[in-house]
Length: 285
Length: 330
Image (tube, rainbow over all chains, first blue to last red; front, top):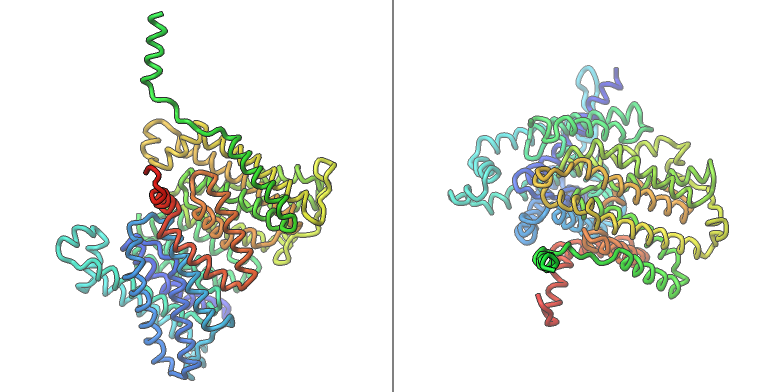
């Protein structure tokens, strides 16, 4: 019983981390048809920034996190405005290669600066402890992750469906040249969504630092997981990404608890089955 | 007399069949360059053997990506399965390298056939992700089946009997280098014949326009399955060669990193014309060898910038620019 409970909590937290990292990539893929494999590198940059600020600069976690997100978002915006916008019309394979190259350079740069050891983010006192819920005690960090994941999901859904920016975004997805003719600033929308996606990846990197340790090859190691979530959830679909992330997070955690010697077999089997069943994404027919 | 004139006239009007350079010429060229490299750098035979094996693997990837136009990130699955099959055959049945090579090929081909039956129903991004899933499933199975793969320690302890009963594998790696070069040349010739055949043209047609080829009556799925299986055979051969020349098979032969790396090599050399695959493999492996001996992160810088440069200034465009600068015809 307690194993089941642990699986549920850890799986849910893991799924939320996957969701937060993947949602930006899903939107970029759906909106601009841009295959951004450097997304994992943005998560790494966010995590490393937060680790540096909390540990070496001794900032509080609550101050370091927004600053790290801002840095990651700015990096995303600058890269998009300078280089990546030229690649939107290129073939998928070229986008894949360019962004893999970009992640290699980002990996090499972060490691040249920070060194090869695993980076730890210093959490405030009450987050590193545990919370008593009456029936059971839970690590507080897990609760933060789950809460933040839900908040991000709500904020994304609300932005896309209820704000002017969301209207522009959807118009750009449906038909970018018509949207541009109607006076919607397509470039601004693209740049801002890219930056937001990068910042969300950074948030995922910070929140997930306990479940996915910040190590030199982080960007490549977890890239596959993020890609799987995006593919299963369906490009550009926030609820689909959420469902896929939680489902796959639960499966991966359960197989780690119950059948650890099988590695990631069940994760990828589940992915193959889900993709074969709904190639366009969980909630699309 | 009149009729003969007519035939002559018709022959001049009809467009001629596309001219291909004879397949043996480029194969002979590869043999000559490879042999020259072996004789001029006898102390680098290990590196050269690795280049030959990698070139064969990238060649097989070119059949899938360059010719058939199916972007895949799971090609290492066939390579790894071929390697483990050849290693296990040498360990448990017989140490003959040529039979082992055939076993590796069959293993790679069977995996490609079986997974192709499932994978080729999908296209684009879904296909790409499903190839990742297949190779990761094979990796997890290899981690689990310790008796057959040795798990994280790798499969080792197998020996090769002398090639054709005469040439024993020596410590310097002369026989290993010659053996892998000859296998590469033979399979390169086969691949070139395959690509220039009517079958290869049909596959190219599917790459260009799937719907039109289907409308013309080409059985698209069967053609793609055949070319995927052929690529699996070649990848299995590369795996078997790698197992035999290194005398060890590790889990990294099934890894995502290998799949991504060979894709990089292919694009670096130019996809779709087979020669580029060999060139890309040679350049990449040599760069890797030099840069990673200095510093592993240094290597990431080099390959990262190289990749971005290749996309921004593609080799084909750079060549065209160079030609124009040198005063050639456009």
